[in-house]
Length: 93
Image (cartoon, rainbow, N blue to C red; front, top):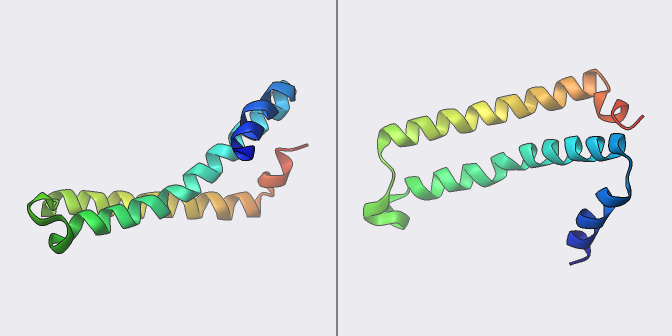
């Protein structure tokens, strides 16, 4: 509840540039956590033992795995380029 309140009230008291920085950092964090949600989802829906007749088909599984790998590679690139260019800290100045 405290986290929800902070996320709701903090932007109201920040200047436009600080709100933009906060929004950008929140989007980066959400992007990085996406893999932690999608990988178990693909694994779970690919299991015939768990899903029974609702298991995803092989073509769907291949597309899902390709997208998971693409998301992970793009996130790795984001992290490496952010550290290399020191852009994570530069956004706050």
